[in-house]
Length: 256
Image (tube, rainbow, N blue to C red; front, side):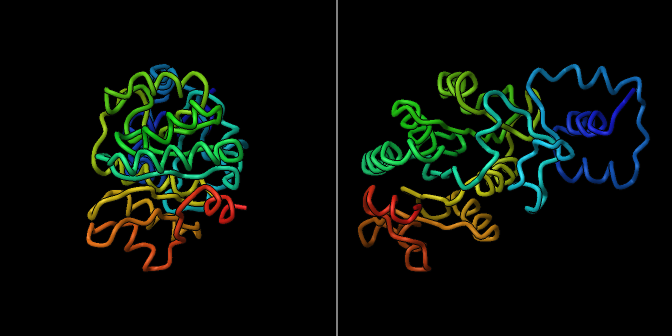
């Protein structure tokens, strides 16, 4: 017997996790060949939680375009309460200063907050790795299929998070990442956390899309300051009202 959640998973796989396509299929009551549903679902190896399941995270239910399906490996309970998570994001081409301050701040707070990021190069990878090294828990939100490690240089990190932390994506199987996927991923990163910490970001950074979603969802935004004249996104956000974070004490006070 085909259940409602089976149809949702089937459509998610059929349309490679594309929200609009899945929504339109449901809205128009797309004709479905039920004989192919089970076969399509069987291509998925990951764990699955759908929007109609009881354990679907509450913090995602009321956001813009809540994911119909979350594919995951690891401990799904890590996203049950967004108040226990902190998003740490920033530049893909980070400086030594950005790397050091990210390590310092993550190591200081990861015993109290799970660290959420997007497993990109740069600040994201530093944040994930430091949480692991410091004995904390980390959550990687992918902009690719759950079975597709991107970038390939993060394969070791991907496997560590998959085995001992939480790896999630709204995209099934081996879906190749697209620029649109990364924007969609950023809304999930923002929704899963109590606050967003930017430790380094250059102008025209994709980090700003996460901040924009976070502000829509009522999340606090924290930024590490940079020297004048460097055209830092962090400085601009601080000027616009983000909380200035210089050290671990600042971060703890803001969060607690």
